[in-house]
Amino acid sequence: MDQGFPTVHTTTTTVTTSSTTTHPIIRFDPYYTRTLPGMLKVAQVVLNLLGFICITVSSQSNSSRGGWFNTVAMIGFWFTGILLVFYLFHIVEKFSKIPWLKIEFIFCVIWTAFYLLAAALAADYARYVEAFGVAAFFGFCAMVAYGYDAWLKFHAARSGALAQGQHSPKQVSTVTSPTY
Image 1: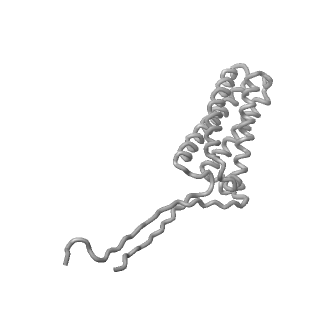
Image 2: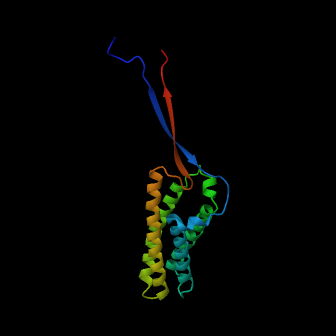
Image 3: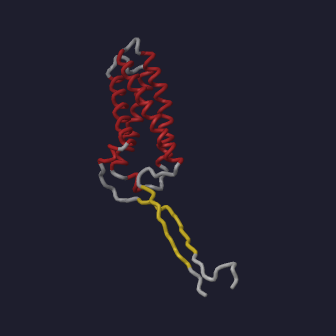
């Protein structure tokens, strides 16, 4: 008998693949507002609206600083509000081919910078109009919320996560034995 290679052996092959699980049905899911991204979007919408109201009711709402703040606040309000509705009704999941995380990341980075500028300009003008000081507070809070959201979106996009839905690993094992 040859003591080298055995006459019978078994080969096991394990293949791990990742499948994407999405449900392309439009449905209302209030649970999204209990997730961290959902709470951030709700906070951003509220902060945008509060800052806008503060500037609008002030006596200097028609100044260039007030106009800039209101422009930033209203575009942020509408963009974030529409995204919130898209997530609540799983429209993002239905159109999963769109790079939602990258779009949100770019928007959040831009709005962080815009709110830094708008809130700083409003804070500088607060010595003349108190409402601008309150708007600046909401603006800086919105800046932090958009900045944190940008950080979360960057890490999610970098790791290959989906905006909505999930990746589920699937393992397939096969056993092959040669016949002699």
